[in-house]
Image (cartoon, rainbow, N blue to C red; front, side, top):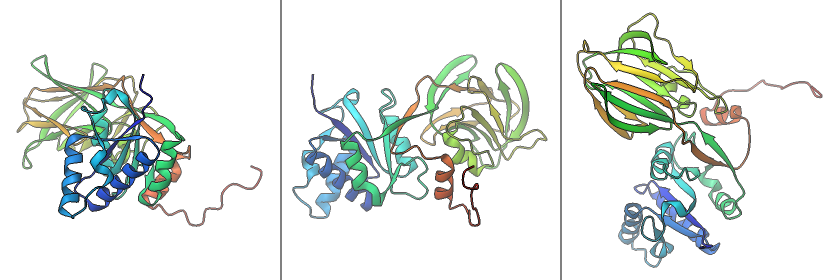
Length: 311
């Protein structure tokens, strides 16, 4: 049995700061005796960027390629260099094995990331020492049915969104919870989200922020024309279905995390429920979610004095 340690690096290869961060992580891992691994396309793009910049003989030249030098099953961890979109891409790559993801934020908000760019050196040291915790995040299993037959299956960490495919037309849908119809309305779309996704698209659509420790699924209508079209929070054991009604003025489209998509003709049915396979995030500390909200959204807390000493 091999004693080698393999760490996958996934980065936003078209950004110079991500290219520099990838090289820094590669060098640190190699010095610690850990094998840095890249998806083939990303490694080629990083090497091409170095060639264009006139860099030669860097640590990237001896990095390993995922699927050739190392299999997904051999990975210990994924270090993700970028924003939440890059983390979603990495989660897709290792979906089958649920390999833990450690995000280093090089984007804007970076809600899923554990560290910022200026903490990269320390983050890699903690990876080398295996000094981190693993937190599981609920994901959705999503199926599309047309005339009773499954035509597409996917998953989502943030959300599965049913949207109208034409900007000038409205989508008519009916919502079902646990095999019972709830309500129908015309709308721009509807978001089926997770607690992780509650600070993403669902948040911008007026949905509630759900603490990661709360297991639930959210249903957030988008510009719905109905009296009863408020965001809902349902049991994680529920099966939620959205049907595109035949009276719709057009067809719809399903997006899973903004990355995987499927056309929804009138009559199509989308079912979502909790997946048996979570996404696993590496964390350095067990701080309260409040702190993350305050930091990422720059929330004002001036004037807070806290509980009296001894309470």
